[in-house]
Image (cartoon, rainbow, N blue to C red; front, side, top):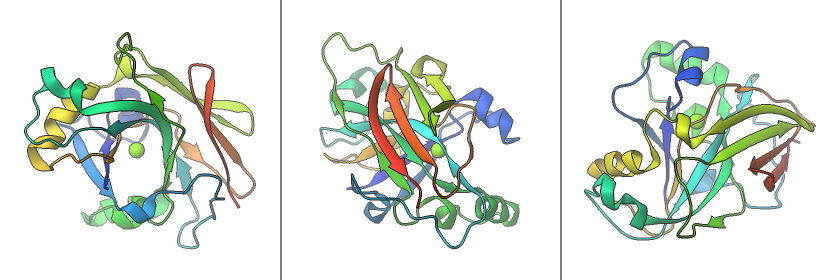
Length: 203
Ligand code: MG
């Protein structure tokens, strides 16, 4: 499996990092080793002094496909959750300045937290998924899929022009504003509506 991530998919987040609004989805990947196994602690990586959380809606791919049209995209995922795209922001800034790839800052071991999946039902409204992140019990991020620059189905169409989608792949759909630092001892808890889907402690 692979983890495909979208960057800068919410205008207010692009703005907070001083990035322009993209006219095509910004895509990067994390390898399988980036997936934090559930009930495993997250250890603060030694190569950063500025670890950021980014809470995002995550889709689970349920059908193999390539060149998927937006109108058919909803047949290719069957469950949704929230996760964290952990980012070594200081390292990412350095890499960006040099025009280098981001992987060291975003695709390191355990940098992808994925919550418990909620199966998608026929009445599921993909344009109105409300999600939030609490840090130590306080809300630090909230967003709604309706605010995405590129909708879930548009993302699938775009990704699948470049990368085959395979059953079990995960898609991180971008973070809303409110990204910030976390330190050892912090507990991050992710929600869709009022349902808690993950809780991770930084050790
Ligand atoms: Mg992200």
